[in-house]
Image 1 (cartoon, one colour):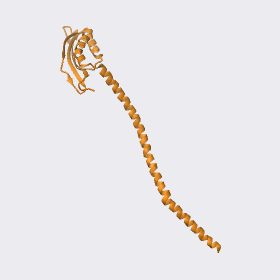
Image 2 (cartoon, helix red, strand yellow; image 1 turned 120 degrees about the horizontal axis):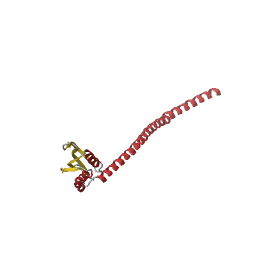
Image 3 (cartoon, one colour; image 1 turned 45 degrees about the vertical axis):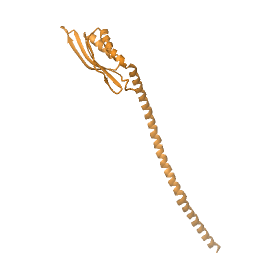
Length: 183
């Protein structure tokens, strides 16, 4: 009889341990696994954010370099940009450039200043006469000036009986800082 009494005890013990394992699985293990899965998911999101921030950091460094180059360009332009007073004397500089090239200035006509947001345009018309080499030399000297100059019209015509003389009519604009509106 003692053998039959031990079987029910071991069976009850097995059922009790199984029940305790199931209670542990449902109330401890599964919720912990769900929590671990959510932590892993959040970790994956954070990793992707960190990788994205790394690429953004290199993009920011590149943009900062470009901003530096733009600032250097603006600084160089501002240092070479004539002031309002210097634009008035620039017409005289153009006349000197023509004379240095050996050409003769026939006429220089300044036109009305055009004020823009941060720039001022100072246009003028010039008529110069000389041989082809003198005119080319004049244009080269004008082009080498540090100021920002746009030639908007250039007309070369042969003049004189033999065509040895060339007349150069050009319209140009000198850009200057607009001190009333710029930073």
